[in-house]
Length: 595
Image (tube, rainbow, N blue to C red):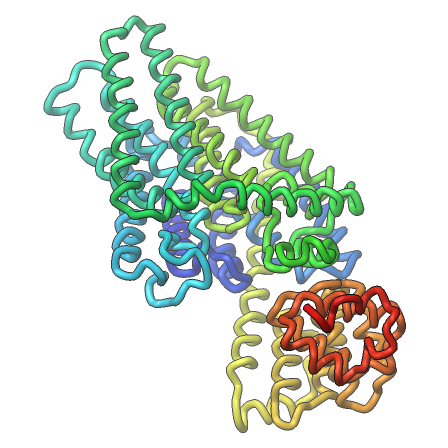
């Protein structure tokens, strides 16, 4: 029962919060998932040494983040990772107690059918929107309920493979009226999930789903051949051909989107290669423990240079799950993840060798795991909490159905895991409260804003609240540099890698009349973020122009390098204001005026 509640929460996270892809959504949905997982863990007598090791390693990374002063910036990802463990434990416990695997599969198929129908209707209604909101990118492609169409491809690809697996089970043996009725739900789910998948126009998502589905069909054919059911092999081959023709037909009906993207596959491969080269170099700098959960933004900023800046400044993930873990958790975290999957794989493979296990479901879940991993090597769907939670839920189901219940373990481990999840849930609630307070500060206007700025800054605020206070203080009329300085000092105490906060603190100090201190913090901003996102780049360059005479030679060169990233018509007034290149001779100035 608790596992089904977790599944429902994952669905809500996907459809009400774009996959819980925000700090507030991670806290909001992560807290109840952790509470459910903690309750199940407290009662699960089979949690043993493996759970204790994972708990110790997570405690290690929490301690490292606290020592580095990065705990609060990584809190949303710690909550999301803890929720992954919670849903894994919940689904594993469900699989131990469920009477029939087909009942669990029916619930999953119903989940994906409902999700695909909603997403399909939303796309048909308005291809460039997600429900009522304008999409920032991937226009014309189905991405509902996520921002990225590639993430949606991972989600609906899982639905396609699951539907095919259930169809293969339903068609095993002679067909009849009673057996035929079991085809209705998987066939309907397959049709809608396949339609949504094709409409995403995700090259890797579609091709990998097709390849893994073929693998599942071949696996089933091999099993039937071994059992002597050779008369059904041609039927399976025909079913595979029919599935391919159906996908082709949907692609033709969907227009030119997918075809044009297949033609541009070289462009996508080139940008991915640029990303992976930069992140591979960055991973060596913090080899053992990485930058910590939540640290990707700052690693990405420090990895930019003149050649890759047009690509890297827009990235929020490494587009490769192995690189992502290496960057954020280092070799220790990567080995921990590999060890977990090796343990899970061993349990799953043992289930394939045992009679009495639902081998058809195990084979299907193995293929789903291969698909998610393969797509995760070229995209970032696994960085979206709802997709990570869905994957963990299916992994827990696979482990649970693969092995019989074992002997009762020490109560210490299960109680420790339960308490840890409850503590993490409490942290999620505190983070949610801080985020809600930050939203209230950002929404303040008029007298309410004036009252907030007139009061002393709350020194024990969290990261989100401190940033909100700084934004309000600098955007109010007139600005309140004293309040902004207190808020930004708190931000940098909680996250010392924030180059944006350093630049905003420089602006607050400039407003307060301390131009030399402002120049020092602006210098630190360029060191942390050599190239800023376009929504911040021109603002920082204008600040640089105001402090030009206070900047050192290295900071001036950094500003001139970033100036090349803006439009030529914007550069000329800036160069005239600063007179940065009037004397000539500086390599950083070459070509700036003529571009």
